[in-house]
Image (cartoon, one colour):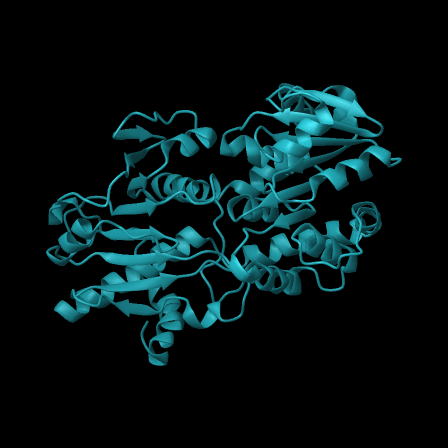
Length: 418
């Protein structure tokens, strides 16, 4: 990574980008900008979920010709049923999808895109990198990093890093929650679609009915549950079951499978449902991303995990609990606290429950007491969710910000050549 002087690039990038056209043809051939995203699926659905949203937005809103390289097409298919798992190259939703199953292979300079994105530091094929050297104009090479609320991100956003052997420079692009980061991924019409959907109770009820919910389930407090296997789900189910308020918990198939199986007394397959006490638990099939957004919009509380659903829950403007992806030596607890510091100031119930949910609380905490404290704080949490949604929207869209920064790099390279 380069020295501190390169941090000056970020503020200049924003100023220069405003004067540049929306989509640059670096070669001047009158063709669309080409962009390749390389994605290795680590978090089952979160990684490919982010890359798929980004690829579609680049193609549909910015006219970019996108190639999405994915190593796990089976996980991809869970959130996009149109994906064929046995096809090397396919067109899906206006995006060229390539099955990335090898680090080997030979590439020509003509195979390399104008903008090359490696998601979360995945190692793209050496042959592809070598082909970048022979390309003119040189590609913009970006490492799209994972999302964190930690303060150090602002100093590292857009920093360059020279290749140890080849005459190539890669830049780090960090999504984030402030104007000094790349912002969060959000489609241009998402907020208007959300507003229209949430303002139409009949549309919400019809959507939930299509997922199998009865009128009684729809009338109850609705909670979507998306978490990692180690979440303390069983204790929360017991608290809901023994509570006075009817709760409908909607769980995607395969999520929290052990606790869901124990509650159902049957295999937790899509369509399975059981009621005990005040809790009704329903297993949903995995749904395409637009329908998952609607699910978040329709529920009263959303439990989300990783990065993709975490960001979408924030755009939903509803109360949510984040289950952060676990890291060695509990490094994720530091990231969780950094986010809670920004988001949950003064919301003690939300903070306590979030820490408990992620194994960062005290040993004497219990699901029921923490849930009741959270419920008592819900009006304030709801207000904060709406306020936060407006706040992060001011930072702009990550995809648009990334393109603007890429145009800055392209213009600098052009001026250097001239």
